[in-house]
Each structure stands twice: as C-alpha cells, then as structure tokens.
Length: 311
Image (cartoon, rainbow, N blue to C red):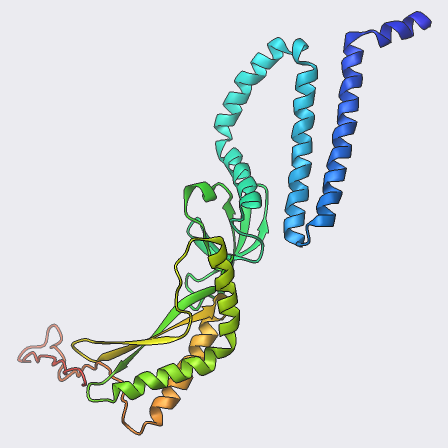
C-alpha cells in the first residue's frame, strides 16, 4: 500500500494533475476577488455587469491556457493536429470570432451602452441588449417618421463595429442640432419675422440651455473640439421665390418631434398676430384645362399654366 501511494505521488502525470487542480483553484479565487472588487468600486450597473462578465471570460481562457501549458510535453502530436484543426475552424468561424472581438471592443471601448440610440450596420435604433455575438436594437425610422419606434427588433452582429462607422446619438452629448425653415413672401417685414422666431425659440428652449451647455463643457474637456454656439439662432437667405428664415436650435435626441411641433405651433400663432406684416410664401399650380382622352376626336388639347410664385 505504501509503495502504491509512493508511486502515485511520484508519478509525473499525477503531479501535473495536482498542479492543474491547484491552478484552477487559484484562478477561481482570483476571479471571485476581481468580481467583488468590481462590485465595490464600479458604481454604474451596466458597466459593472460588463466588467464582471469579461473577468469571468478571462478566467475560462486562463484555465484553458494553464491546461495546455501543464500538459504541453505530452501533447506534442495532439497540439499539431489541434493547431491545424484550429486554423480551419478559425477560418470557418471568422465572423463569429470577429463578433466576439467586437463585443470586447464595445465593452471596453465605450462605443455604446444599453439605452443609447445608435446607427449600427445601417440600422438606427435604441440598444436594448448587448450580447456576446449580437447587439439587439429597437428600430426607429424607416416607414415611421420623427425618430419613433416602428416595432421591429433588430439584431446586428458585433463585428459591424470594425466594418462601418458607429453613430451614437446619445453617448457623451445626448443632444442634436436641428433646423426649421420658414418661407416668407417678399414685401414682408423680415426683421420682425426674425425677431419672432428668436423669441419663440428662446422661450421654448430656454429651460434646456443650462443642461445643454453643461454636457457640451464635459464633451469639450475630453476632446479637442472647437467652441460652438448653443443658443438658438436665425439666419436669412433670399432665393428666386421667397425669403427663407432658418431657425437652428439644440434639442434632446428623444424630443425632436415634440419640440418641432411646439415650435411650429408657436411660430404660426406669432405670425398670425402680425396682422399681415409677415406672410408665409408658397408655390401654387393652377390647372386650366385637361388633355383630351384617347379615342376622342375633335377635342383640342389645352395647356396647363403654372402660376408665378407669390412674393
């Protein structure tokens, strides 16, 4: 019995198994300690979840590497075969590997997080889940206007972060510049129209300006970016048909549609109060005759006349 125990203890294979077991235990302890540290020092829930999952993945990879290192001298022929097979598998699963690499890049590179509105792989929507292989989006747009949900849930491969630009509408600066164009007839008081648009924009957007400026300061502190005007502004151009006033403003990416609705209602109300000093311009067409129907004889074709634009 003693000889059997001695043979087992001095068996090289048994020694490697014991070494491997100890290594696994140490890896498990290290992973648990790292996850506890993440739970203690990382306040954001989404970031904490990603880091803990990445630590667990590193633990699994470390276990595989440890097993290969410990039994390397007995896996010579097997290692060559596995290397050839691994090369073939890597070629066949290159899209899967790229998606896993994309998940790592998204998790550590701050491309986007759950809740952000992004355009990824040509699809625009809100991120509802970031998986190991795919990112799930609640799509907006397509046949629905105004950046509203259309009801489709889209899953995009994480590998697209390496293939196409990633547009994040709500990352470090969750605001967008938007514009409203108002055509005004020639002969109208364009200075009065400009003052009315500026007044409406300041009254409607004034409460959000402080938040916008704070977010812009944080963005400017992290990137080399030029200073930009965040206050609403109105510019004027004159074309062949009318004068065009453009109201430019900064708006929360989630409230573009409702904000433009409020602005349009206020602008129309204010223009109505000018009692004709400011009139909206439009282009109209007058149909003065219909072309003859096929098969009808004796009917003379009449031409349609286009009216001049109102000025």
